[in-house]
Every structure is written in structure tokens, then in C-alpha cells.
Image (tube, rainbow, N blue to C red):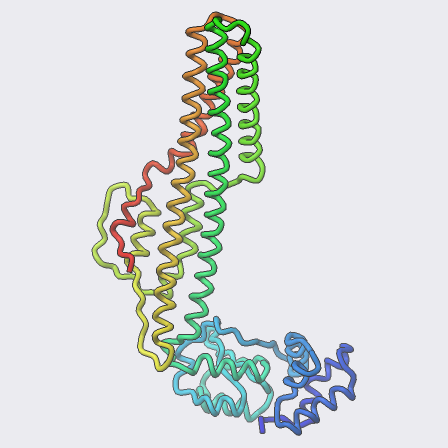
Length: 405
């Protein structure tokens, strides 16, 4: 039988559920009696048979015992020093577990935090000279803590590490998805740039045929080509403006690198970074240094009694995910640069054609269009330089120096 599992005490512990209108006093009494007959905790009956939410049970226990509550989370960084020489059977018998260290105070999760036998057992196991603060927890959570944190050597909590590494891999996957979205947006802009190039071609051909003057009967068709080219340019510019100013708000060069660095910062906590001999180059970029860090990171898993292979594979998967994340940042930066270069290319074409029209054709009202094309081209060249210039120092040499495995 568990410590202090008497019916009267269990009824008192969960009495707030009655006060809150979640169940009647008779229903609580029947649940307590059912748990006593089956020799299980009352919370199991309340949660799995009566459908009371976990948080409501914890709130009721916290109110009854006059303390805060804690629930199981395998990501909690329980200090290894608190787990030394602990007997899992003894902890399971009294239902308590050390979950944290707040300065000099040890935080204890206990099903019965005010039970003097539990308090005495804690001081006997962990030392009477320490300060303790007791939090209430469900018996099920105490069991989970014991199974997860005491199933391996305290120095290597394999289950705990695998969960944290999985969380970081999800974080990196989310960022890589965002980077893929940015690259798609860049491709969208380059697609609309093709409208500008096509429109410019129609205008060039139409103006040339009009200047030739040999096929007089086709003059309306030539003017139609010029007008159609103008429409394509207008469509391309409107679409480009809409994308650039509304939903297309990609982060700038430095922001891409900083967020990528934040998404792989777990390497220093969960992996081993080999200092090695790092080749130092003048003007080496932050992204290249970041990839050097990833390449010099190795999985270092100490000896454990269980799941050693799975732990090692989890560490290695995280390293590979970090490399893919940095590579995705490279691809996004290059996509941004390619988009900027497409601006420059189209801008140069506009300026060249505009100057050519003014130079070789007679003065006319269409020279206004030629001047507009020159101004538009210069603006696109300036915009393209702003997009591509920060990427000029980035290179892929960092990848060449790293090993895939």
C-alpha cells in the first residue's frame, strides 16, 4: 500500500473538486472506495474513469497541501548530483523524486508532500544538512520521473537527451521550412521579372518594325506589339511591387545568419566540439565560421546500460540536421543573390534599349517611354545591387572542408 493512502486522506486531498462542482461528494467517496479496493491511487480513478483533467487534479492537490505542483517532463534538466545513490524502489514506495536544484534548495516532487514519513525519508536519502522545498505531483508523474531519470547512469540520461535533441531537430526543421518558403518567394519574383524581359522584347521588335517603315499595312500590328509589351511590363512591375511590399517580406542577409546560428546553438550543450586546427582566412564570414563549428562537432556518447545505440544515432542525426540547416541558409542567401542579379540583368537591358531608342530613332513622343525605361532600369540595377551585394563574400568552401560523416 502507498504511504498515506487511507480513504479519509484521499477524500480530503481531492475535496476541492467537489467545491468546484466537478463532481459530487458521493462520487468522490465512491472513487476513493474503488481505489482502495483495487489498491491503486485515487487519481487514476478520477482521471481515467471520471474524466477529470490532469491540471484540475494538480490544482486540487496543491490547494489541499498548500504548495505548488509539478508535473512530469522528461526535458527537465535534473542535476546528476541529485540522482547519485538513489534507490528507485525506495522512491517508488514513498512516491517522491528530486526534480531541481534552486541555489542551495533541493526541489522535491512528492505525492504526499506534508507526510512526515516522506520528509524523513528525503532527509535520510539526500542528507539532513540540505534545504528542501516540496511540490505536490501525481503518483503517475513520480513513477515517470523514476523510470526516465534512473534507468541509466546519472551522467548520461539517454532518454532525456534524446527528447531534447528531437525538440532541437524540430526547431531546425521549422527554420528550414521557413527558408524554403523564402526561396520560393525569391523564385516568384524572378518569374515576374520574365514578364519584364518579354515585354521589353515586344517593345524592341515593334519599335524597330515601325522605324523600318516598309510594311505600312502592318503598322497597326506593330503598334499592338508595342502596347502589348507595355502591358507585360506594367503587369510585371505591379506584381513585383505587390510581392515586395505586402506578403513578400524576407529577412535580410544578417538576420538569416543570426537565426540559423540560434537554431544550431544546442551543439555546444549536447555535442562535443573538437577544437582541432581551424584554418583562419582573412575576411572569413560568420556563416563560414558557423559551418566550421558544425563540421568540427562530433557525437560523444558515454557508456550507459541501455539505449546506447539509439542515443548515439540521435546525436548524429542532430549533427546532420545542423549541417542541413546551415546549407539551407547558404541556399537561401544564394537565392536572394540570384534574384538581385536578375534585377540587375533586366535593369541593364532596360537602360540599354532605352538609350538605343533615343540614339537611333527620331525624336517623338515615344522618347518619354524611352526615358521612363532608362529610369526604371537604373532603379532596378540599384535594387539588385542592394539584394546581391551582401552575398559577395559568402562562398561554399566551408562545405568542401567538411566531411559528410
